[in-house]
Length: 171
Image 1 (cartoon, one colour):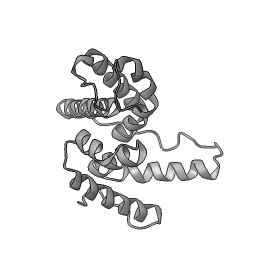
Image 2 (image 1 turned 180 degrees about the vertical axis):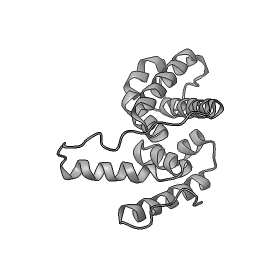
Image 3 (image 1 turned 120 degrees about the vertical axis):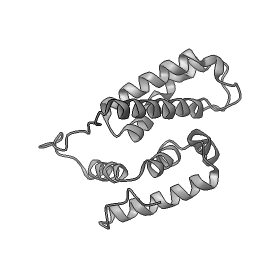
């Protein structure tokens, strides 16, 4: 991704695969992720005048997406709605090679992380944002991001190696 873009509208379409991946990290649900990408792109297109040339377009849109998801979660809480998760048996009788099985294990392990750990890992390790940019998207100090990444990696390793699986309440 270029660090500077003249007109952000021209490069937003190129970010769609990354936006969808990050939305899946945020929402933990395919349908919610698709809706969130649509909302984030619409907001970004309506607010291109707020984007500052010279700043990273991907970080700007990730921040829009994170804030849109926060808005959605708050709305759902007010309506006392429950999040729907993908059905566990969605892929019964489908053969997967080892890479797909490992990817599913990692995805399931990521779902067990706290939101703070999952978002830090999603932005830095999955999306490849520099620590400073990820910290800005999450509106936290870089040191806090580093701590969340470190602890999140430890938890993921424990889960994937068959260790304890209840980690939601850990700092």
